[in-house]
Length: 181
Ligand code: NI
Image (tube, rainbow, N blue to C red; front, side, top):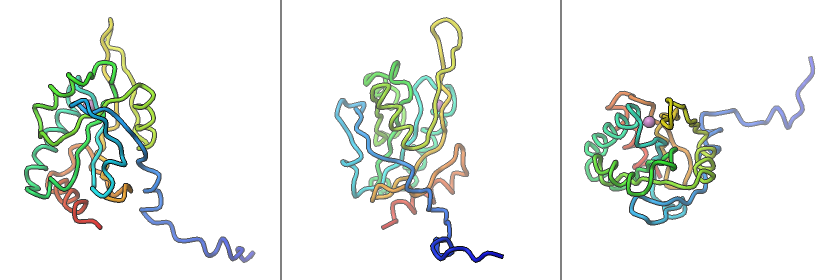
């Protein structure tokens, strides 16, 4: 039996965090208030990212409703993180539409939109997917990744919350994110 070369034998053991650094990245998008927000603006403060669209019949309103509840449950800790809702449908989700839609949820949730290219770029950096699904006529819906990404204060992927994950677990993950160094 061949002995593996030292370089191979000494490779670090793969851990859950090995791929973490591949998720997330640079972005600069427009908020529902008309201001510009970039990842650099969030340096030093954890943030969470959810991709969706305002015409979403179920996944987005459910997620934003639960997130609103989770932020309330966090109490003052909720102010220590920044929740971001990135539209994958910038064609219809104008700044005004985003502002109106997000008015139904926790006011700390920041809606973000960009050009088609900017939207594709941020989704790609998070390994999130989305696609337009025609509904007949000019109407369409969007399929999209339904994960909430948790990014730590260093801008590194920390954890994720799955769609409709147990509510207590959602809160626990957000608490750990806020407490993380
Ligand atoms: Ni949705």
